[in-house]
Each structure stands twice: as C-alpha cells, then as structure tokens.
Image (tube, rainbow, N blue to C red; front, top):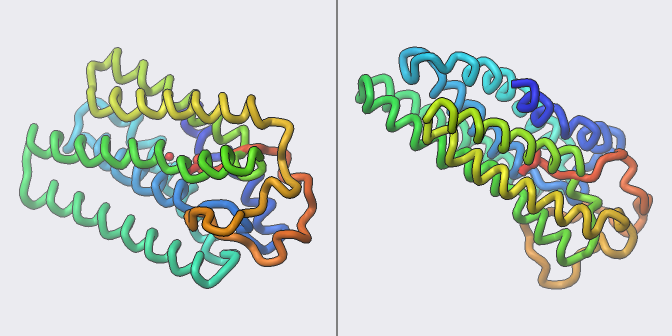
Length: 246
C-alpha cells in the first residue's frame, strides 16, 4: 500500500510543472485516465461483497481514485490545445461509463463467485491497460532519444508497485492481482532500462516531433521556445505513469 501510494503521488512534480507553465506541453493524459479506471475497479473488486478479505486493496485504490481524479481535472484545465482537452474529456467520460457499467452489472445481475469473477476480469484488463498506457511515451523516448516526458519517479514507482503486488498476488493465490501486476513489473523494468539509456537527454531539439510522428502526445504551443532543462526535477510520465501511463 505504501509503494502504491508512492506510485499515485509520483507525478506531483510533473503537475507542478504543468500548473507553473499553464500548459500540459507534450505530456500524455492517457496514463492518468487509465490509472483512474484501474483504481475505481480495484477498489470495487476489494469490497467485502465482491472479494472477501481484500479490504487493503479497496482502501489504497480508493485513495488512488481521488488523487487521479485531481490529476485529470488539472490536465483538463491546462490542456495545451482544444484537441487535447476534448480527448481528455472523452477518456474521462469513458472511464466513468465503464466503471458504472461494471458496478451495476455486478450488483444487479451477479452474485457470489460469478460477481468476483466478473469484477476480477474487468479489473485485470484495466490494470494491464494502465501499465501499458505509457507505451506511447516510451515510443516518443525512442524516437527523440530524450526522457524529458518520461519522469523517472513514475517509472520507478510502476516497477516497484507492480513487483510488490505481483508477489502479494502469488502469496494470496489471487490471479486477478498476480497477472496484471506481473505485466506492470515487466513494463516498469523496460521504462527503467530506457531511462538508463537516454538519461542524459532531457530536452533540446530531441523533444520536438518530426512530421508524421504519432498523435498520442500533443504538442504544446511555443514548444521551440521552452527551457531545454525539463524543470520538474523528475524524468517520468504518467503514469502516471504512468504514469501513464495506475
């Protein structure tokens, strides 16, 4: 739970930068939405009437849902373009709809083991998506050879959180905890390897997109005039982060 809280709080330096510059720049909002849906579903899965003896899963993910909601709101307020804001709004709406659907179906149509299985599968799928959400940022890192938009703290937190919950799932023989967090541990390790390779490149010309680059990460206006040094003292995404990209 402590490591998971570290994961949820690791994007704070990134968001201080966003608030200070009043722009989301090249940061991706996808990891924060994916972490939010993961937190909501995991908190639901851990409730006693769904999955007995998993209250710790509910408490930490409930806290995570509150934190990630704050990140999404900040991202919407300071979106670097109208297109980015619309995309974030669409993602946030999809997150709310998906959670409401799972909660209603599990409450009204399922009971006992069937309810646990349904919620567990939904949580596993969303957890894997959460851990995979920074893939667009990882691709940007490889293209630009710069880790400016992949904060180190988030990458480290993803690896530690995925590894610890993977072990927890093994000890509890819970496949719905083991499988997604095993994927998270692996993807977190890949992010750390990328950071080690490109750690000396945190800005400059490498951060600019070339014609035809993927649209997953929005360009901020005035990109060429920004300070070459990342400015937030961190090296990772979101997420969260992942950064994003719980």
